[in-house]
Length: 248
Image 1 (spheres, rainbow, N blue to C red):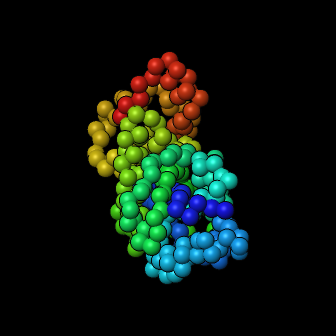
Image 2 (image 1 turned 60 degrees about the horizontal axis):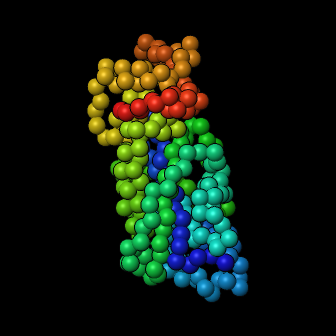
Image 3 (image 1 turned 90 degrees about the horizontal axis):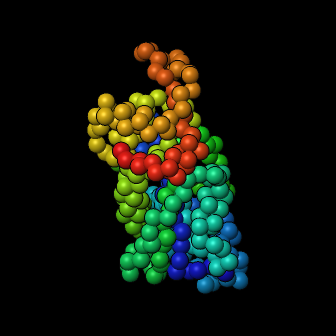
């Protein structure tokens, strides 16, 4: 059984070094139906497949999500959904909020719990699930036609990310394993949508002692090679216990 009026959506943010992207999909109706339920239960939820524009037209995209099976834990199912549909696992995932406006889905009363995930696309090998007709990255500022209140969910998730990234080092989840200080600053500027003073930013970051000098430099670059750093979550957790005040 599934909760016909309860769904889970995942806003997957990815940073490619130049812009912030979001991963959207077009689901495969027949396989998604089997993933959610069995034939005996189909009559209870057939309007999901008959009226959802993303399941009837290639012109519409949506967030990766489905209705919640009654036997599944909410947080665990969000992780399971991402792993099943994209092959992504062991990533940062955080609940955003519940969206419950009465007419947000035109043909049914649906409450949606949204999550956001943070990844660096180069660190993950996206696998096209049989449940999806297509999965594609889109520039956060240049989205395609989307279903229902998808844009509102994305913007709300982005606002939550912008708040959290200033107080917790979650931005490191979107960087390569080894990165330059310029790449780190660029990430924060793009996520926060504002220019940061380079000297002050680097001073703050380095004073937190969160970065590990890899003793390596960039290769195959036309400019002077910059030093490469990594982020050690173990160091962060230790410093947090000691009272680290992370603030960008």
